[in-house]
Length: 169
Image 1 (tube, rainbow, N blue to C red):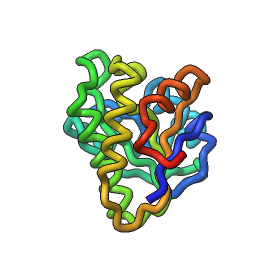
Image 2 (cartoon, rainbow, N blue to C red):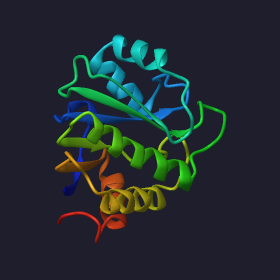
Image 3 (cartoon, one colour):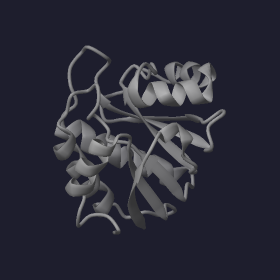
């Protein structure tokens, strides 16, 4: 499986599935969730909320609507907004469960953000390392291309440094 790093807006990416950095309620507010909701349309938020709440570290799969993807995998690396922060365990579980879900629905490509590292408050360098380790350790059945995406220049550099040795250069 190819593992690489991208920079840009996740809502502008093309893949079989895009991963949403979700809270357990699956309500799509700000950050990655807000970008995906704005680009896909409110139907994405409505479907996501109808599948929640989910347990911390779990995922739910929805249609991608107007996004250039088939699915959105909502990975709950943090509790509902305001109810706590992401943890190393929740980031690891959400990442692994997103990979498993993508495989189960037959995805070949996946784009995943730094789960739990935005509004959820987890340290970006530590979180990116956990995500990188989890992807590198994963044995896919259908996934052939997994990309971690960073939005800003500084985020990209932090994620790049934290995932050296895990991803394809």
